[in-house]
Amino acid sequence: MNKLFSFLAGALSGALVGAVLGLLLTPASGEDLRADVNNRVQYALDEGRRAMEETSRVMTEQFEQMKKA
Image 1 (tube, rainbow, N blue to C red):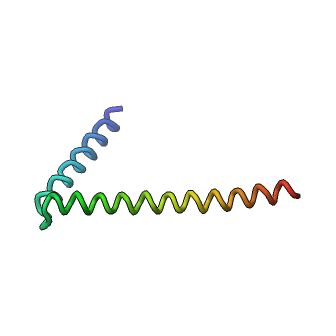
Image 2: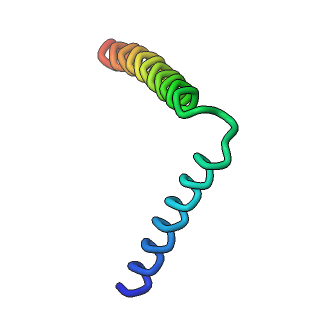
Image 3: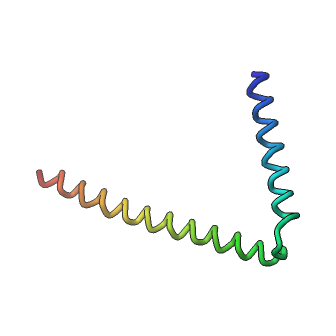
């Protein structure tokens, strides 16, 4: 348990330090960063929706084929 806690504390500390350094050392303004993050999140959500729709379509086709067999 102690090793797990130490690992999690180190990982969290490293992530926090990395995020702070990334924000401090970036050449873009806060508004630009927020817009970029928003665009990337929106893109990821759109890609996830497309993948979900495609998977749903394929699964439905396979289910219909199994029903006929």
